[in-house]
Picture 1 (cartoon, rainbow, N blue to C red):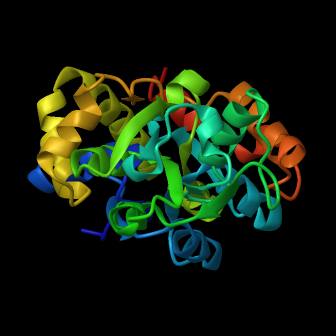
Picture 2 (tube, one colour):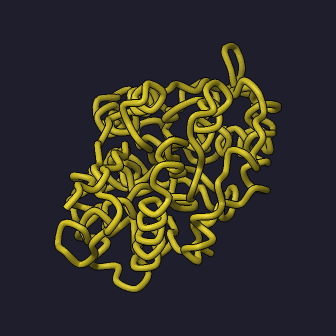
Picture 3 (cartoon, one colour):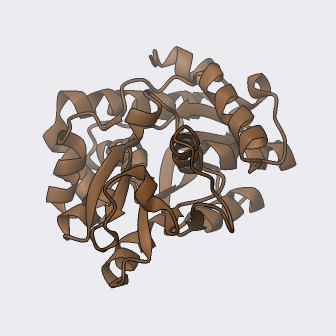
Length: 308
């Protein structure tokens, strides 16, 4: 029997990418079997190494921040977005030692974000601008980019409260709160309800050479997303293992409140991506240029999977 092609997918150990872990778990346990492909997952600590491996062709696909995916598409046009990985799911957490009670208290301090090309950058910038605060050197506050997995350690060691706080994908916000170094300030869904963040992109040659395998993968991911609502305890258990995270941290992310991150609507929404790229290219000038979203997004797989 001919060997099935392997689709190698990069990801970070964040709850934004939980559905990939649930699908991998189903395949490993034999709950599901794929006829046309196998998958291999590779975890990264930060966004830049993941983006570089995607750009270099060392990965067949990636769960990646939408603005990074757009920027890579602008430069190379070698991959397409096939699915949202989640909606919402990030948190602004303030450093307990920085005495932040309201937005104005962020003045004169640094805030950590996971990447300039991120929904997090957009969300915090939007919140600050709408409240009259300015970002940048010599202005009200400065953004510093830090790999998501490094944030808990930074917060632990910042005894003088020089870092006001951060906005990042879960579970790192919940982890810092559980460890006693931060307080939850605002959920990302309160700034932009149902906002996109991470997406699944696959190389164009993978889509063209194995569309049946891509259909299998996307079908499974959509089902995995729905399963989080249907069996949250399984999602907690699988997530703790896939993300190398404490079970109680995962429980807090997925149950307190119940849908701080959602997985039941994974169909790409072009209007949301358009808003994102307009903001990233115009308001904060983080992206090089706009892209043709209708060419970037390959909607056929999400549609066939019945993604909402």
